[in-house]
Image (cartoon, rainbow over all chains, first blue to last red; front, side, top):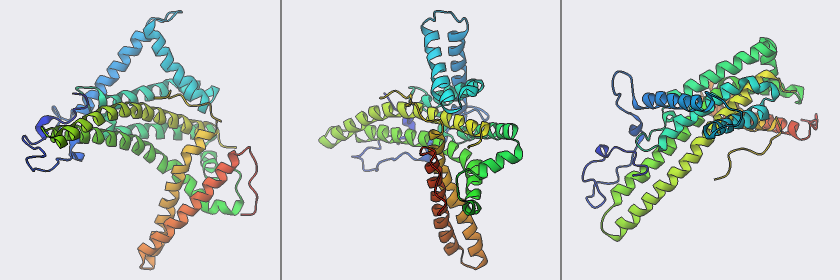
Length: 268
Length: 81
């Protein structure tokens, strides 16, 4: 069944809206998954599998490039051009071309991680475990801090960051700390939380409707209507989730590009 | 479902647009924290936190205002504030 994301074992057998046990609303515990062995959990396996799939796909697409691209190569080139023209050149400019491999990798890595959330059988968005977005955000933070220090020099980088041009001088006393905190601390935090929260909420939402479809199913008017509505909502929300997953991967990549651009050229 | 490719933007526009939220959070955090510490000194941390957070929100709004104004055709903000 589409979107059946809760193992049926977790729902008490016989728990039904006519048996008076109350709606077993899914909570954060659905994100706590027993490891298969050692520290290897489902998200880890999905992440590795996703990486392998991306590699296999792009090796197949670009392994033997032809002047007149085949189907696979066309799709791969579309993805590449989307990142290069749609994100890198748009945000960083022509000198951003050397960051395209990074942005390209981030986009597809985040996207496949999210996409597992609606793939039947897997049905767990990897990025709904906070550690994964945090790891990505730390990587992005290291990259843009390093680039800023390298391209603008350590002192100029921080003064450019703290004193954006075009403001009356006295106001700087109050606004400079805000700029500093916002760029150095709040940026990576919001980057990680945005991705995590979207995936977390989406997974929870799908689970609620799926559980409701089972919980309400019964041979009377409330049961049929409620269950059917929940089921239809599950399908609709799955489609919606597909959109959100791609969108979050896009936003994550776009923001990475924005931060890199900010480190390369100071605001003037 | 529309295409995910955005309309061509001014190079600075996405930069500033995404910075707004970070600025607001940072403003509340830093001046809320500062207010909290000052309040702690005067044995009234909660009042300090409240005043600080509101001040921080106001300050970061001013910051956002100036940044967006700068985008607006490069017109210089007036020096009256």
